[in-house]
Length: 110
Length: 119
Image 1 (cartoon, chains in turn cyan, orange):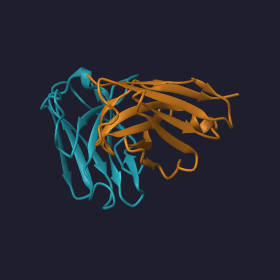
Image 2 (image 1 turned 90 degrees about the vertical axis):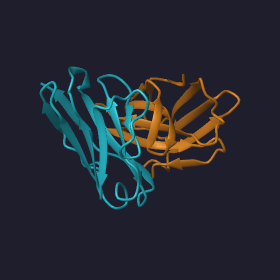
Image 3 (image 1 turned 90 degrees about the horizontal axis):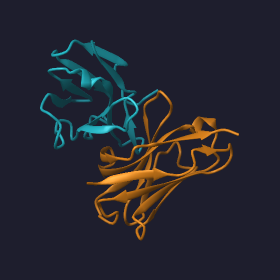
Image 4 (image 1 turned 60 degrees about the vertical axis):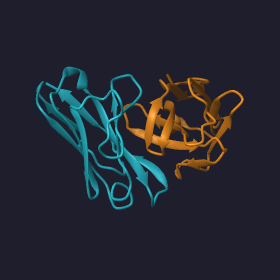
């Protein structure tokens, strides 16, 4: 059981928008920055978002991040078939003294 | 361009020690702010943090693995290594080395290496 809770799957049509939620607690999301990772099939994770809502160089502005209280959200607009991947949220948990992740959300672009 | 490459046996026998090395190129492992990290991913499952090490040699480990893990650094070779002792089939996973700007902020990942624990 993951410390952070994500939906197991989401889906939407090409061109549409989708959001992926990540729920935690005061010991993790509530007091630490969240990062988001995209993992395409058979590849290593790739940093998509850091410090809740900052995009690394090269990540298009179709991707956005937000945080409120003990939850974080990743948004993707203008969905493309190439966005089909597993998405993970991660942060530091001050009580566990450990990096923790969500269980991952599989995005399907129908 | 920063690159990380894992190397080590792909098959380890139960009760033995899993040993992997990560070679870093395009950057110096001695930069003080980086978290040189190990993660793993069980087949079909999510990401798990194993631990990280700083240039100084300071280490931080996942409490659930701490009793079996050692991460070390070799600045002369620009490498850092993972040792996981007393492995079982439950340690079968893809293992990734990575560079972090913070514990959970990983900007560069190795391609990963699958390690199977089996007799």
